[in-house]
Image (cartoon, rainbow, N blue to C red; front, side):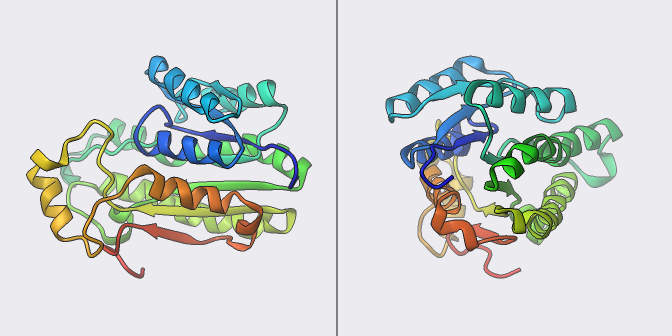
Length: 249
């Protein structure tokens, strides 16, 4: 697989971190499948940007938290490019609310998108990775799951579950040339957010040991490394990209 252009699915890649990941993987020479659940126009824009970087791109819309839709996203990637080699499970929802007031349906929605989505996608993608003897699966957790924050209980539960899934997949599929790792990002303002006028972001900036907040290519660059041949010995790891706000876990 080392000399063959690979295909990467990046979920939630119509904007922000996902868009940055798609760009960095495209710069590394991978074909990109852009995914979003609602805004096709944004996804198509990212696909066009990716093509300008010299690789091919497609759009596969769908809600990863619905099993049938998750499986169709993988099918779309395979139908277009013949296989799926890299799965970046970036899509997530992060609502907040008091623990005692969270409705059951809200719990279920978060668990479906944040936890079951990566499970359904991995199950659908792994047979192709196994066939090729090469694959990269990357999940996302976060500081909420590591430290615990008020009002983020259901998000913490869903994200912490992915840390367990990451380790399980690393052990089971590592011998087949497939790695599984998880990224824990710090604060990454949205593309359209002006942090200069935000008291919240200015406070977070002040408290960051690196003296700045995250940029999408901070994460995209790490993921491009993990998806390279040189990244093949990094397996079952949580990689914290937060400027030093959380150090050890």
